[in-house]
Length: 329
Ligand code: NCD
Image (cartoon, rainbow, N blue to C red; front, side):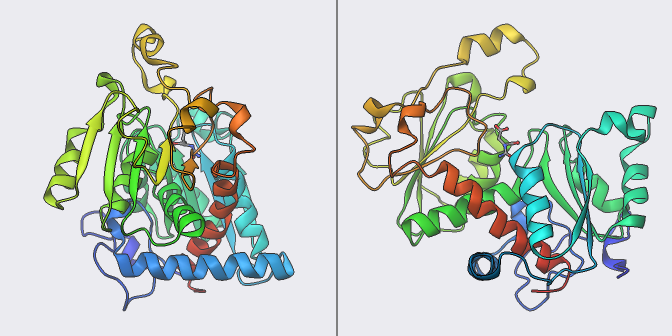
């Protein structure tokens, strides 16, 4: 399955724009900017089908014989294991490289060389890397599709897709929603991807963060260009009552150069039972996880707490994406 489109150094290989007429076969998934509203509708239709199939038969052979390389230069619980589960439920198999320190990366191998090696053994590569733009770089060298599983403080497109799928499953149509994102909006790549995806819809956005962790101005400008109504706050009180979705994030400790700066902002927001007294009864409370105290555990039984269901939906979305880039959806 040689993919010449992905094998280039200079010409654009990303399927930006509406690709409804072109299949996703062999395409890399690097940024949510690749997706049109039509693409999202299609992905979610496939994800719904995957959910139904898993419920009915558990595992099936759509990707039998295909191999995924899971290449993680940063820690991961959910993303790595849900891609593994997704591939295995579709009958494929996985080369797990979760600890790059035990791979040739520890000997100084470059990312392009590691990618060119792994693609000899696999049909698709899922990559998480601490550097902004790492997946884009990998895709320039790869003949096989690269799926960005987080590139530093850049994007996390598959998380944003599963976040949006969660909103749809839990609540229904995205249009008309007020979504409030809370926490580390500066370094939180999931927020970057999700706010970009939401800007395809008729939504209102609230961004709540400490001043030093506000949403990057680049994304603010994109929202302004798209004429998305949004407001920025430092406390949750005024944003919460109108919110249909509250998307809570962890302060990204590993991105801080100065540990004292982290200490100043950690624990700024803690969502508790008391906080939710002022929220809508049908609020969807989300978190990409891991949480490190931002949502009190006593909320876990609240029907509005969607974060564990959100995780499960992620597997169906990743099954859909794998089937698409491997030409089976
Ligand atoms: C997120 C990430 O890695 O960006 N985790 C995830 O993939 N679910 C969020 C985080 O680490 O805080």
